[in-house]
Image 1 (tube, one colour):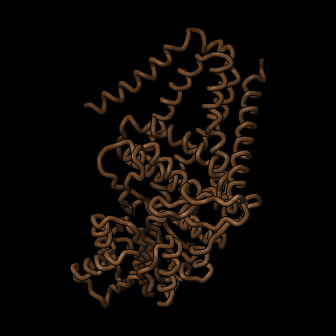
Image 2: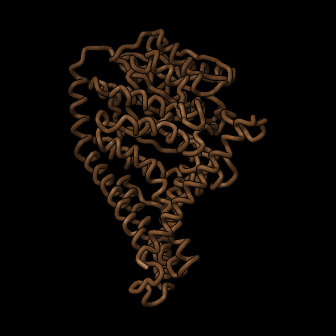
Image 3: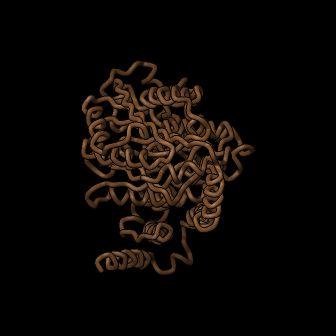
Length: 495
């Protein structure tokens, strides 16, 4: 009842904002015609793109995926090969209360793998090493069916940990019939991951797959609502990409690879030693974004990447900062930095091998961060230079359109949404776009949430680094200046 009342109040506020707009403004819109036209044209483009993805997602979920799954199971039932299951797990600074259920889920999944399993767990803390082995013993795991190896390393970053773990796994000479599950130490693995994943690789063109995700956040909060909405949006977008059988990321929380590919020397180098040669910033060695490196390695070699919408991993997510805004900003800087460092080279590949829709979706990641900013900037300019009546009209428009998006996302995921979701959606779009433009000019800035990777504010900064930061600020400012000039010209073109 309370939730229904909050939604009614939401619509009441949107209607009240429309009532604030002076009578006759919608017919005359004196001083705001250019703004309305610009927002309207861009809105038609963005909403048609969203509608296309929504339609593709629904078609994939209801029609394409069931047929694909049935075909995979049929091929797998005829296979006489052994399909061993390898697990590569990285654990660093994870609470014991999380490590316990996570490794229990991994051992259960390993025991459920018909043709045996091998687990390599990369750890830093000796306490984690002992805890993992104690869980293994307490569950009476058959050592002939499930082999456990812990690799204790120094805290030198996730990429280095993954590369060393993969070298150990490569020593077992996995075949093209085997699968490799990449898992973060804070993610619960579905018990049937082998049964769900192994049939996918009966298609030799598939190099990896990823699954649906959910999060355990804790107490109700904006941070929890934000994560829920993000993962629900992700399910829609991934289903849309599933038609092309090429997803846009292989999430580091949990993804599954064809084992022989994930132990190739060039794959190991991509995991541990990936980099970008930038015309202004020089060589940028990647510290974060291993999931983007593995994705690009497969994409550049022509392999497909599948999506399983009916398989779900669950990760434990903690709020990294004291406030919601600081936490969301910290995570988005890392996520979008990884995206921007990789999608440029993917765009340069062109649409020929990956398909036009996949290529356009990657290009859209760069374009949308600028188009998203046009709306609020246009409204702000119009309010300052012409009429403030456009503000309540714009806010009401945002409230109604984001509510419609949230309604579709919720119906697609078969769950309703709190009234905070439309606001969080708009926050994610605008703040996310601003952060994307920020990291686009600062591709050399990287930092893990739990680690000290990257340039810290307390470190002495060399002159060349300070120069690069100054250059980045200048280029970023110039880009926004040209955007504002273009918006002002479009807003006044018909006067």
